[in-house]
Amino acid sequence: MASSSPDTSQLRCWAEINLSHLRHNAAVLQNEAGPNCGIMAIVKADAYGHGLESVVSSLIGHVEWFGVANYREAERTFKAAGSQSPSILILSPPIPSEIEPIVDAGFSASVSSVEEVEAFNKAAERLAVKARLHAVADTGMGRMGALVDHFADLVSAIKDAPCCEIEGLDTHFPSADEDPNFTQSQITAFSKIVETLAPEKAYHLHLANSTGLLEFQQDLPFATLARPGLALYGISPLLNRPLLRPVLSLKTKVALVRNIPAGTSISYGRTFISETPMRVATLAVGYGDGYSRYLSGDTTRVLLAGERCPMLGRVTMDQIVVDITHLSTPIKCGDIATLIGEENGEEITAKELAKHAGTIPWEILTGITSRVERIYFESDTDA
Image 1 (cartoon, rainbow, N blue to C red):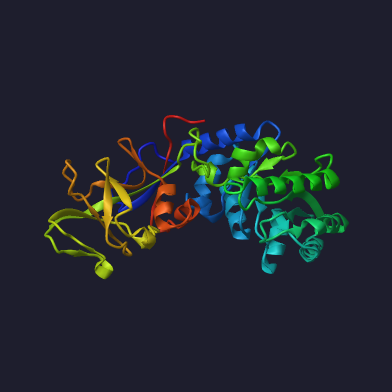
Image 2 (image 1 turned 90 degrees about the vertical axis):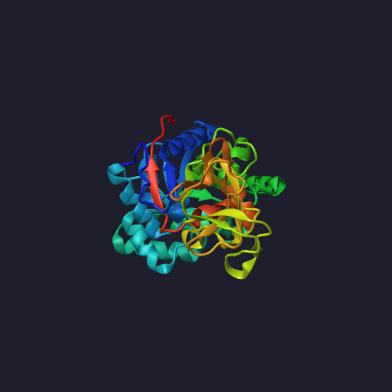
């Protein structure tokens, strides 16, 4: 059960997950999708680092589907949903050993080839059930799916397989946040597929990720599902989406406060050497917690006493060092530092950290390790 006031007294580094914000975002995204398009909540990679079980149980009744990467994640999602029996789609190509368990559990699977259809049909025949399949069209992502010219053959193979049921048609946007023209060409290609193969909307039709939903939904009147991931967790791939609320905050504690003289080197490689006397704080977080080593250097900031404090030297496995010389508020051991989140009107976002690390916010979130305890709570406001 989520608490209203997280107890972090015994924790060194933790993530606070606001489940009220999660449901608020689901409602915002459902409004963007419109009345004829449901939401498939993407909860792969431990719900983008937020904790799959708690995210799923919080979203039951607020979304229509859950999207995962593999059989194990589907199994965890099903168990987390309790008696609700949600619809679950495995988005990645299955490895051979997953096919029969997927069919046996009644999960929906994504297929790209006639050979995969045959494998699912054989498994379903052995189990005397129907395999539920979504045919994937490769309109430009390049990692899975049948090429557009061969997509009709894939759909026909599913229809002709006596133990398979075609449940959906889908594709994926590789650059909706970077290349709107290419994304429009994908929409055009998929629209033609729909006109030819599913004119009556007999199947689920889905292609929009977070950016697709927020930026291109008006061009997808045929879509019956949207698949937001990052936006569900309150981070928009676009510049200005104020209605979304961040779900995760990442925090740590001050382990040590020291005064150092000029000429003191800090951390591995001695990449920082103080030019003047300084007051510094050692924080109980490092790359062992998922705080990337690529964040090393004084461009990265943390929040202490509501003010930005620059990193000094390299991120190590278990600690970082920050400059607190400029702070007017005395800092002591045990004080809380915010790595991702808001404090006294200042905010550090996952997107900011991603920029400093030379990566993307998806990797920042999913990289938070199991050593970081997740603390779940409800805020006073909800969707």
